[in-house]
Image 1 (cartoon, rainbow, N blue to C red):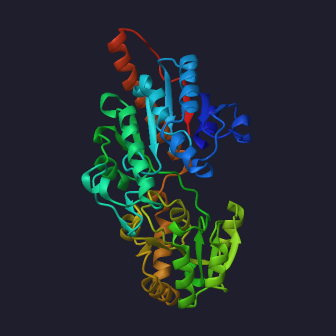
Image 2 (spheres, one colour):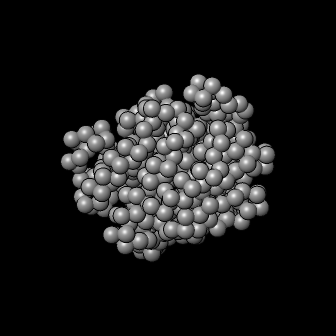
Image 3 (cartoon, rainbow, N blue to C red):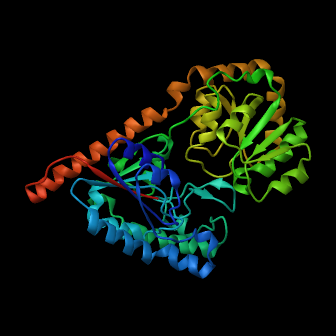
Length: 407
């Protein structure tokens, strides 16, 4: 939704199509027309309803087809963000006539992998199988059950049939370069993939003197896939202070495991800035593949070193940049030893802190740089689509004057 307001301010006609109820005051203030399907997240529905609507959301398809018929021009672009939780693969049925003018941002791996994570959740290891291969079809890898994996396979087959990239000019945007090989493995043609990293706003404009601090920090959902139980136990064994910022079902369990842990709930950016000033290290023990750990970059560009999960796409970059160290989010003992080591190593923490802060502009994109890069993507997409349109119709002119955002 962020780029909707930005583009509207730049004079681009923007309309926003979403699966939920579309209640967003910022979009209204920016003059963005909102078209809401009016549905709930699949996880809040009964199993039968989630299965049916998750395979093909007829209401979403019907409304999007109607919007395209009434609003589409040769200069209109369509940017797809999140579709898997409500909209379903049905939107690709509606988008087929305009696929040359579609840009899709891959925030996860649902455009390539049936379970969306390239991860074997039952075994706790990254998946190396090619999606929909025999190895994939036979794997009980879903985070819930084999029955749900069967449903996800059916949904992925349907999505591939409806979204034929090979015959179009559509562009898939990866939020980190490390995603590209995995998207290709899942059948996305290499020529259709570009990388556009998420923009990062540091928590602090001055370097946090992490080497003088004692407190470790977690920011995110308090759920099993984020590794918070392992972190609570490791911090207790290491006897280091730990603060959990965020909400989720595991708050009481964390407090039970580690009574000394601080659980402060959700915090806005101003409150996070205050917390960051007293932090020694951010811990990101995510137990599945993570495409782009935004909080890790918000921290390290503030001068706060990061302990990053072995399963994060950004792991190698963070290690090679000298701004953090890695952890196996399934080994509490190893994480405990890492916490003990960092609690003692003031010189090492200082070096990582300084590296992250000094190289913050090369490690990340600012909001302004991201906006310019996104507009370049739109201009290139409009240009190649116009060339094909002219070749097919021997006419047409102009550049992208309107945009539909789906998410």
